[in-house]
Length: 171
Image (cartoon, helix red, strand yellow):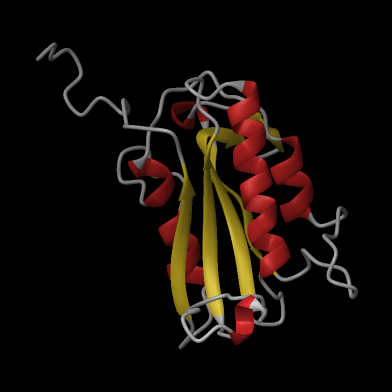
């Protein structure tokens, strides 16, 4: 009995999802992740792209720490113009045979991002009211398809330590 035939199976179960979704993947690449942990996070994000079907699921990418909008694989502090949202919604992440399209900006950006020396700011990449830089919620609200279910997938290792909501307050 295959997973998709198992009566107890719910969700994916061996078949591609056919629900229209707009999803922003948010990848924590902060310094608290080791190189091997970041590699695992990137593998997880790419696995999502392998499961999803670009006909139904449009995917965007945000990162923490923020990236240089001119060179998304490089970090840039958000106070200096860095952006949380590095790839807008994409439906070109797979080839016709279902393999990942390495020419896709989404796939190539996931593959190239490295660790950031910025702290773990979990809130701003999702909804940035501190630095007012493009974020995951902006992408969903501005570029999400009307009537389509929306969501975010956050790959992270821990608790936020930035931005400091009370600069100068040591308590």
